[in-house]
Image (cartoon, rainbow, N blue to C red; front, side, top):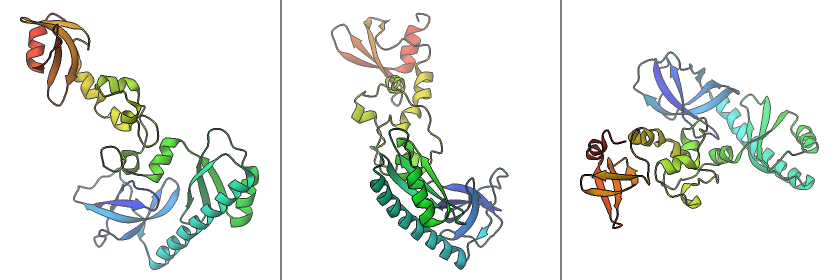
Length: 265
């Protein structure tokens, strides 16, 4: 048994599976079961890991017939997307079509869209059913999900976390930015979705632990002959910045700072 990473069309996430097929290698196509049903994906990595019982087994390697079916599905998605756009405009609906997904067995077409409120898409649904003669689902998603689907590059220059590996969105707050002394400039802390960047949640627990039992920013402290107030803590540098009464900032190693205020706070 070996562990493989698989990507599916329209999804940048890498899903882990196990297989007992020793011939499977990178770039091969396989069939595997996801929550939505049987799906065709491409192997993007073969991992040298021990067998993991919690991971699902792939169904099998894809055949030429499976690949042909997948190509037809991709073509249908493009056709359905264009047709849906035209009907949305014709009905004057306030909605933005993001993506169309055709399940591998063609049991359903899913139309993902965003909207500011509820949309009466009954006439649109009739048009889609009449045109494609399949089960149709119109699924409203949020702006974070939209960005996850579309993808892009974050301010760090890397592919968006939500598009690459985040399966669920964790709550993110301005308080997390304050905990890490990040600039509260909306342009600095907002992602492509317009919401607070997900990475604010990554190091927040470390900062909270780092500052535990220490004076808060703005509190006055006395360290030997030095008097001033705490400006900010610097986790990467393992230090704290103190502003003296003369307005000068001084950096102090965190261990020295802890020892100096021990029993005072």
